[in-house]
Length: 118
Image (cartoon, rainbow, N blue to C red; front, top):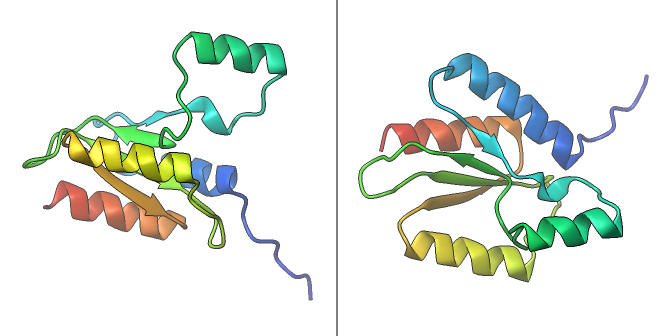
């Protein structure tokens, strides 16, 4: 019997985005490129162009009740949220965005459903 390897963070995110886009084709979802490996030169260029440390992986620009939109930080089941991410999440919450950390496709879909139906 072949043992299944756990999904990597980018695989969880890609699977979630595919399902999300099928389920909600009229509500955009945007992915931040911070999880992409870059050369030092490209990373410096992106920082000059406005890339921020700690920015969540995904954004859904749909206001619901008192929130301006939904940010999702994707992690593996054993992945840690960095101090920079915690700080950014706290800031985004303080200015009216909903922020959640999800560790599976199902958890992310549940978070979206909960947010849209709040």
